[in-house]
Structures are given as structure tokens and as C-alpha cells.
Amino acid sequence: MAEIAVNGTRLFYEDTGPGSTGQTILFSHGLLWDTELFAPQLAHLRGRYRVIAYDHRGQGRSADDAAASISMETVYADAVALIEALGAGPVHFAGLSMGGFVAMRLGARRPDLVRSLILMETSADPEPAENVPKYRKLNFVARWLGLGLVAAKVMPIMFSRDFLTDPSRAAQRAHWQRKLTGNRRSIWRAVNGVIDRAGVYDELGRVTCPVLVLVGDQDVATVPAKSERIHAAIPQSRLVRIAKAGHSSSIEQPAAVNAALDDFLGSLPA
Image (cartoon, rainbow, N blue to C red):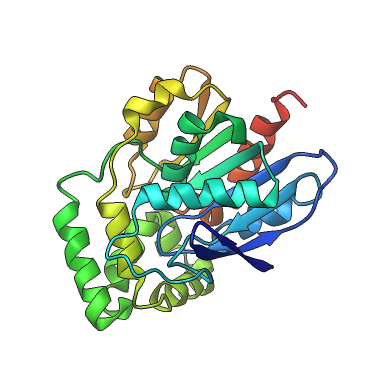
């Protein structure tokens, strides 16, 4: 675990070392979370790959930011700077939701830095207009009164019905709700960046590397149709639906996600 100064900020990251394949997988998390979102994948892959995961600026253990809206272009530039500073490229870049917004920009604009893309629970489009007022209201409350007051409304956005209603996962739900409410107050800046983001659908034709698109069949934040739209726009992509998973499939159904990653990565040239 370490911090690195890049692009005018300090990013927290985890780096497990070379692994046996000589290849690197870099994980980029979704809004409101941190590297722990990929804990099952890091544990599963670290023996074979150099596995890196990092926290976006203004989130997790990375430095805060003064911008009223941390733009996706800034977060994308952070990822470029991180890969270059660590000498990690080309990487298999795995991004979930917000991390997927970064991944698609990388694939289209910096193909020299990526071997493949793994796009999890994400969208190539701007935030749907019908979501914006609701998300701005939740963000306003979180900014001034704390995430504790909106956690009950955010959890069903982040997790599937199955995860939220399974009695055997009560402790896990409690853990992730504590993480949610434990976010710094300034998280509103990162939320604004996601709400305000521009779409990149028109750039997908420039993505030439292999692509895996993963989506939970119960994702309500970026519904499966969003992943189907990405898949249709990238001819060399494959689409995998994860059963009984919502917007946080990496922790809701880790075995299924890990199996999909193994199958995809194993199909690529050494």
C-alpha cells in the first residue's frame, strides 16, 4: 500500500507485485467506494498477475480535491498519469461503473496503455436525465447532513434485491453500509463529476483491444441495456451477465465475476 503524486494530486494504491504471467491488471472502483470493492478479485488474481488497485481522487484514501465537480476528464487523466508513473502499461484495465467511464476513455484515447478492457456495471452515455434530479437531491443531503441520512436510499441503487434480502449476508450488508456512511463529507464533489459527465459512446469505435463487458442482471444504476449498448458498439467485445447481482457485482457474486475474468483473460494472447 502506498501513495503516489500524479497529475496534481496524491493517489492511494495497492500493488501486489509481478505475478507469474508478467502482465498487469489495474482495478478502478465505482463511486462512493474504494479498492476494497475488488478485494475478492485481488485475492484471486494476485498469484498470476501484477494486480494494482487505486482510489480515485477525492475518494477512499486518496487526496481530497477543491473542485466543485471532479470531472471524469480529470479522473481519466489521473489514471493515465498513474499507469505511466508506475511503469505498468500496457495493462488489463478493469473498471466498475465510474471506473468503467475511465476505462472506455483509456481504450479510445490511449490504446498504448491497455492490453484489454474489463467494463463492469457501466455506461457509455451521460447520466440519464430522469436520474439527475434524484441524485442531486441525495447529494445535497449528503453534503450538508451526511450520508447516514441517505444510506437507505443509496443501498438499493448499489446492490441487488438478492443481496439486500438474503439473511445470510446481513453482516456483509452492514459492513458495506458502514463504509457508505463513513465517506468523507466532500464526496459530493466526486458525485457531481459522475452526474455531470459527458458520454463517450461516439468514441467506442476507436477501441481496438479485446473487451469484456460484465453486468449484473439486477443492476438498476446502470441497467443491463447500457452494457448491451456498449457490447453492440465494440465488435471485439464479449458480454457476460452475472446472475443475482446488482451494481456491485464484484462483491455480490465474486465467484461468478472471477470465473468470467479467468475465462476472458485466459482467451487472450500471452
